[in-house]
Length: 306
Image (cartoon, rainbow, N blue to C red):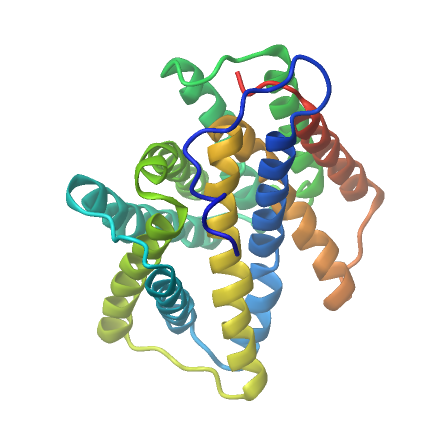
């Protein structure tokens, strides 16, 4: 993946008419990110079926990804973040990513998968409102409409089995709140450090925390070549590509539009599950996916970053 364009601090000004090429590039980065994250569930099922535990998969995911990114940084002679930015990035990986994962998996224990997914994907709305409140982006009618369409689409795609306890709802909403903070902080610090260095530190910090958890609680490694291949796919296709892609796209689009575009993720998961796991797609799910895609296209073609 290229590093020069990904670490650009600002995008070129949008033309008065026509489609802003920088926005299309940013949208492509976020689409690649959503595709990678969307593959995580399918690859995870394969890894778990091989006997690997959750702690082992998460540790290997971030360790392999962080090691690969470190090699990229060394080859490109990119400087490591220092001082305050380094502390922020370590916290984003060791606290933000880990906290979000804890809340998400805790929610799954107390609520259905559909409700958990719906609560997590409140974060585009949270990011939109927070960015507007912080004065980072204007809440235009287009942005508000796109967020509403994406939220409605997510609700339709995960509409089956929306049940859960108050604890499950709290954990699910907590995951969305933590991820909102992660995105808003990441938007600022990645502009100063560059996309590749920021993502590398976050991955290594997350690997350290999950490694400590693995030592304390124990875990099981994959027991087959297919399982190890799935873990490698999780590290590269579902971690390196999506994390770098999201930061690169966010620098061109801003946090609000990047978060809304990332609602492609559950749509990708549904399609991959249908193709590789034989899961069926009903008319309601297809209608929801269409709403999400419509919101994505509208934002990608809009000519202003606001």
